[in-house]
Image 1 (cartoon, rainbow, N blue to C red):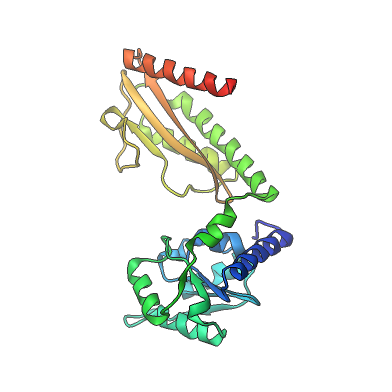
Image 2 (tube, helix red, strand yellow):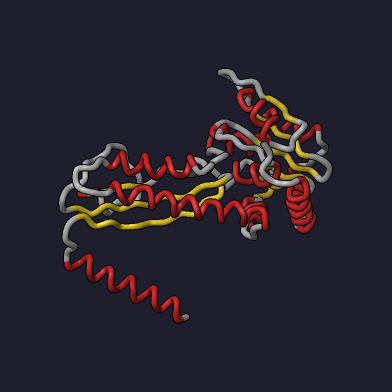
Length: 274
């Protein structure tokens, strides 16, 4: 179930170790799910609970909840997986502090990711209390991830194909009397049928009064004879996204639509000339 080669994972680990050395860090506490996925393949939405990947110069150890034990075993390169016991009085930050001590790390020489959904303010405060003097290293892995490898680029190209396919399958359904739900179903179905994944956030769809919304909202609407449908979605393959946004007009376009079309076309031609 690993989606990258051994050589790719080894290259990424060495890049992290090089950056740790450059910053004088002996250890690194990774809470961001995308960092864990990139570094060792761990693939889960269990980051909503306390979950930390501890990186040292010699090893990587995951501290997680029991529900993610099998997940980590099957989706990652990790062999050392520790479980914190859930309960009314559980404080996994204390378990993490004990693990850090066991691995011989000094908090003063250990970096931590704090700018991530994988570490809530509540848990962040507990980590700070249990492990004072940590260095914020939220940018270390995220900066490395900016440069894509050949293996990653292949997945991005697959995501782009699925992005286009989703729109192609949706367009015939965009007509008066059709439900937004049918459009969404076709788009997400195209991605999944093509071997892709769920997106990091819901597809955005809006018509009528919701046509100018930029976020997903609950509730589906029936398209009218004179309407505007806004779509924002992503083709996703192995968690790599290619996102797009389109506006579809039902019925005769209004003058404002024509002006927007002309402006968009002019901008596109300018880009081509450049």
